[in-house]
Length: 103
Image (cartoon, rainbow, N blue to C red):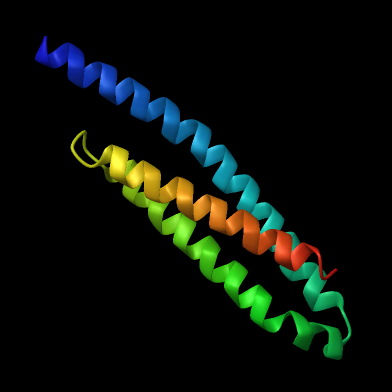
């Protein structure tokens, strides 16, 4: 039964990682688009976006880092890493909304 429990965990983890990878990829695309929009603005408008954009990029880096931790997590750390990733993604969403509101 130990092998069955490991297999059940691995299957659940693999499904979560696959679904989350899609969401992370979508965020990365949205952020790349936001950077391009910012870069197309006049210099004065770009300056107004500097700090919110830095926060957004920092949050993106945090999500990517947490996602890597989830991918490498074992059964003993998976729930903790998953919770940290979900918190990071919520913070990323807030940072993105803050930047998007300025366009």
